[in-house]
Image (cartoon, rainbow, N blue to C red):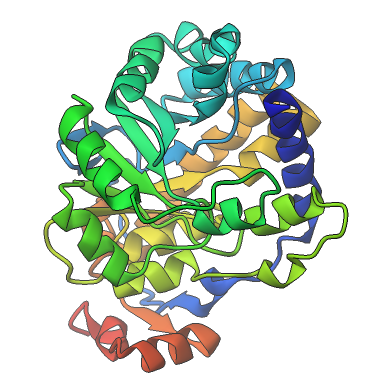
Length: 351
């Protein structure tokens, strides 16, 4: 049943990709200063968070594992990560904990990418002992803990008790033995949630906002009656979450959810993300065009990141946080209602 669900997730996620168009990233605009540009050769893509150092602020976010089809997908993702040097996260390892025979559908991420940065991915129900098993299986450099109450609510066989998650997350953060990143699965992390995670001892969080793959819709599509259709579109976008997180100390923030192209990556970095994760777009390229096409796609993204940063006069990731940014439309209204003053972002370069 678990393997069948994993295969359904892949197919339903791919089915959503053609419909992903405008989202809140379009409400983030850079002020163009025509003489502010720098040199591509001078751009440094390195980034750091929670004691982790990456050569690029871009990573392949957690997707799948736990079935033969998922293992094939992970094989291609791992090769793409190896050839481009981007970090990669596994999909949820719950299928492995339930059925150890599925180990190789995850282990392939390390076998094909022996020197890369790999994150093991678990849910908030996982024990410390299980988490360590998952980390050992992948020789993982870090641990992702996904929180997904909306998805579980819409999932026919999902969990129905969430009150113990904070206690479990604190145990995992203290006992994992590697850096921990807590992430949503497409519904966003509010400032209140980020503050709670910080107080639980979590050093980094991926806001993983609305606007990309919608797991409430995926789980509802698995239901015979489709009675949770009204949950589609639930949550906050990645730009909204990053704006809420502005000025928050004690926890580093990553961004994902609805990232469509390199400009969205630069937008997220400018709003404070230490790195940006991509799932749906890369999955679609891999499945529809193959591993070599995905390698080429990621390399294009890396090249365009340096070009866009040079265009903006940003020599490194911290420099992007000093560029002038306009927040418009519904995203600006969200900020107004949440008491987030975004006017200063438009003049933060001092000009």
